[in-house]
Image (cartoon, rainbow, N blue to C red; front, side):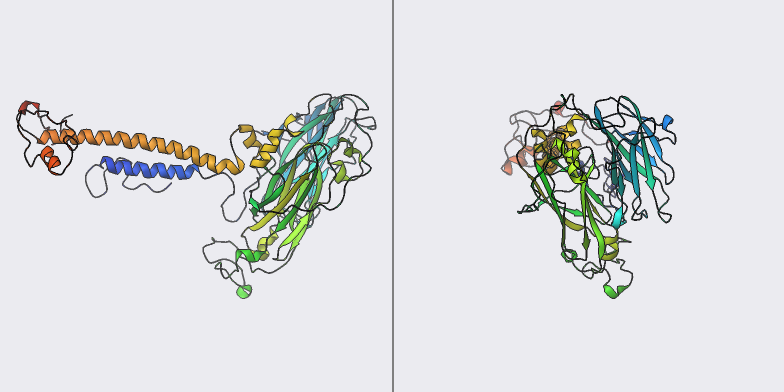
Length: 547
């Protein structure tokens, strides 16, 4: 909002000593309404604050719970729910689950350190589901996440699983199970607690025994996929799983800041095969540091003295970051499928996930994690992180990111479950999901039923423009009627002709006729109306016409 001049709206015009005219007030209100319309079209998205990217976007409506140091005191978690918690540097935190004998349970934990926190290669989070005897229900499943070679603080996700089936010998039967979340930190790492997002999902057993294969697929097309080509379409990423922007097959572009993580989601149905590649644009696309008002290689500090904002580093355009971009893919239960990273030296670079098998129920029995994780249809999540170290070598300005996504193969019928998965919307792919991918919607967008994604700007502009236009027309119309009435009253007060007289040349009506204006327009009085002295309103002491 801009500053308000002349005190309150409707106050006197500064220096004039007179109240503002209707026209002046109309112009002021029109300016305010136009400013409001401009505000309407500012969309949620990228943070513009200097020094830090936008924080992680926790799920809307997530319940806050405090993990316990003892298993018996842990808060209960329910399938289909998302929770927010915290994890201190030392000591694990317990939570509880009540499970049936027929459901596969997935507990995903996303750890979110503060931006700028110091983390080391082996720092990370570990999650396990345990029975009443302390047995780990998923010793061979992916249940830990590390920051790895990038050593850059970012959201990382680990998922523990309690599986059911004829070959499972532990954690059988219904009852209470315990979730333990632990943190690994090097002595030199930051001491602050990490925020946590916990999400519980369950997948029922097949409707009948023997209805699904129990052996992993023997063969599938593992050739390196050809990345899609074509025009790059802008599609900015979300800030978390709940805000992940939907993608379909195509070439997508965004800008990513050092230290920032972008989230996307891709619908992959039974029998379909997903491939993803990423590219970072060259730093030369942003211009040299001299062009941006910063210091060159010999400039020393690399701090900007120009308009880029105090404290922003503009970079020297040289250097090398060994793990500049980290890309990870998780399945609908947020179990990690695969990840890839790339080094960066200021020139354009590429990275790609390994070839992945088509989605199939029997993949879960494969020994390779990337195959086993492609076990059900639904939304697959892609997180892309640009290391904070990039800012030290190339400046704080964002880099251009290109994603090449392909979903190949024909969708086929999935297995018949004994009941619905929870949450049902995350497992399986519907035509509405495919439409969301075409439009670039988030889960929140799709749930609201409003047009979002690529159409969101046009929708907001249309609604905002129509609404403001209607308000302007109503207000301006009202002021026009009011102005005409006041003008009519003023002219009537000044005119004192007798009945049947012809308007004098100096009268309002005579002046209007002399100027070629239709009678009655200037005065607001119909032609032929006679005035008498008695019909002229008396003036009040302040000189304003009576109404």
